[in-house]
Length: 227
Image (tube, rainbow, N blue to C red; front, side):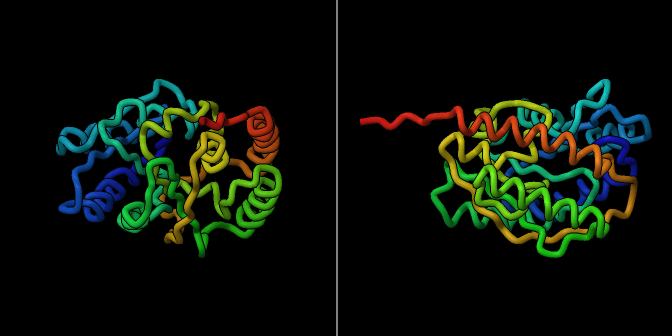
């Protein structure tokens, strides 16, 4: 979360509602260098509930590094990620878990597919173009790699190369590591608090550079076959 005051408590409450009584879990909330009241809100949540843990970056490092920071200290074998803006619906977490339980899923990334995205027309068009270019180059078998709602084993995540756009290319990188990807239809909600941290043009230009880097990684990777 970065400058997401007002979003943390409702999101944590929804996660509890989705998972309580179904399995053991913890909630890791990462404050990515917020300058508003986010830090105070997260501290209050952690003080009130032992299942909530907070990680704080002194300055903003971006979404991928925030995810890496959370995974690095997590206790669980499986990790679920959600964006901190409230657009991902925690009620979909059991759906990802159920899909995992129906499969042999040791090296599988389960990722949401937002069927009815609640974003501006400009953002929807940009995302559609980016997804099309990405799929044509990376062949990652994923219609919506930008969805923040993901489920993956912690050890598999920690095998992936770390860089600032990791969260957008996880499907391709999991396949590179010999894994597979399953897309699951999920809900998507409009943002009701705060503002987006991504500019469409800037994100697109940086994304092209990142895409080329991931394409190079895939081309330079050879998985061994064993007798």
